[in-house]
Length: 91
Image (cartoon, rainbow, N blue to C red; front, top):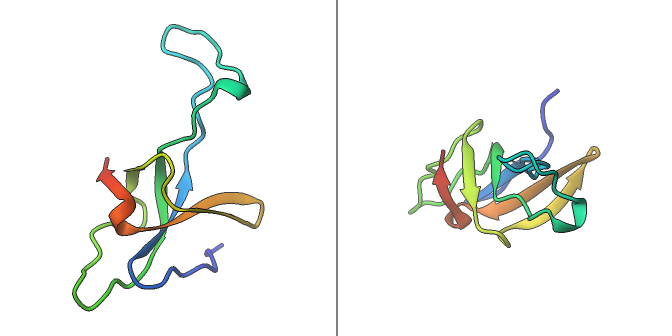
């Protein structure tokens, strides 16, 4: 099923990845101590602006700032909508 959200201008819709529940050494992290995820998958991309061509594309995995974007809940899933400038790197 196609997503019915189309970001405008230089905005990007990102589906955040789940926060880690276990450390590399095997210790489980309680929900109260989990950090907000800073990595996600691009689900939809706006068309850009006249003077700004979009760099990211649908399907890219990206890193973004801890407090970047606006949270959005759609069809029971959590998303972030942010400007492309808030994305730090494509993985």
